[in-house]
Structures are given as structure tokens and as C-alpha cells.
Image 1: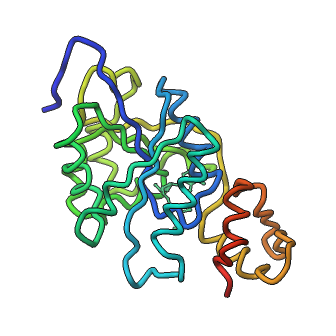
Image 2: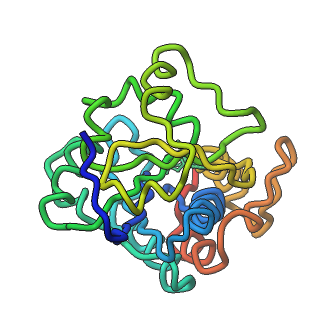
Length: 229
Ligand code: ATP
């Protein structure tokens, strides 16, 4: 059962991901969710990439790109704990480790697509033993998880967002964040198809990379020749 406390609790917001590369979908959605919950800082927490997901971008590059995001937005911080844990990355194990060293309530942010696949995550039903889950919109639809997740969700969903300041863990908040229709996959495809030129417009999808990736990160990508096919 969640641990109820009378005084207002300190809350640490964490967005885990591959950040390959980090984009405005990650940052805009997470900051908007944080605003709605009254949270100042959002910690970006890169995971290790499984070997089969390798796209020639080292962990160091992903960390450097996250560092650039944080340098240019004071509300963003880095949380690198997952990189020091044994492979592969499992969110539940990371949260368990974070709990050991941290007394703050953890709000773990995920996109709606992650919620819909949550039952594929390692020990997914234990996630709420360590955190609240904050779900950000990823598409135009109202939140509509598959049946494998929906009864669990109904059991744990909270309607009052102040719950994060009263309970240390155990709730799911569905937050109506603005839509940011972008993914790292699309950006990698776009960057790789335009790797040889300065033009960031990909004609078949009309993705303008510079609309979604901050200038410092885009410069870093160019300097280090990342995502070239
Ligand atoms: P990829 O396309 O490589 O799978 P991604 O763009 O989905 O990557 P991740 O780093 O895997 O990004 O995502 C980390 C977290 O951020 C996930 O919970 C994901 O759902 C969420 N997220 C990613 N992009 C968005 C977005 N545009 N809007 C809201 N949430 C997002």
C-alpha cells in the first residue's frame, strides 16, 4: 500500500529514454506535464541501448546530447544512474536503485505509447512500488490502453494530481500534454537521408529536423557526423 504522509513531499520527475537523439517531443511534453503537476525540474535519464538496437551512436554521444539540452534549459537535469547498472536496462531495477539513494517521491514520465506496451516491460506490475507513473500524450486519441493494461490502470489511475505530494508511490496520472508528433526514429531517418547536405527537410515526411532538435544538439550531430547512413 502507498505510504501516506501528512506533510507535502519533495518530488523528483524523471523521463527515461534512449534519447537517440533527444528532441522537442521529449522535452516539450515532459516540461508541460511537469508544469501541470507543479514540478520545476525534469531529469533526463538515458538507458543503455541493447546491442541489437545499435545505430552507431555511442552512449557517450547520447549523454553529451542530453548534457547540451540541460545546459540550455535550466529546468532540465541529467540522471545517469541507469548507465552504471548492469545491462540490460530495466526500469524497475533502476527505480529500485534510485529509491535506495533518494527519499524524494519519484514521478516517472512515459509517453502513452509506453503505457500501451507496459505489460511487455520487465516486472511491470512492480513499477508502482517505487514511483508514480505520469503518462504524456503521444497521439491525437484519448488515452486508450489495450485490455492487458486497462484493468490494472483503472485500479491505479488518479484523478487528483495533488496525490503525488501526498503518497510516495502507487498511482498513474494521465496528463493532457500538448501533442508533439515526432520520434527519434523519424529524426534519425531524416538526418540520415540528408546527411550529405545542410538541408534538414525530408520531402517524403516533411519533417524539418530543426523544428524538433535544438540548435546545440543539431550542431553536435553535424560536428560528430551522427546518423549518417
Ligand atoms: P525511438 O523512435 O528511437 O523509439 P522515441 O522518440 O520514442 O525513440 P525514447 O527516447 O525512446 O524516444 O522515448 C523516451 C520516452 O519519451 C518514452 O516514454 C516515450 O514514450 C516518450 N516520448 C518520446 N517521444 C515523445 C513525444 N513526441 N511525445 C511524448 N512523449 C514522447
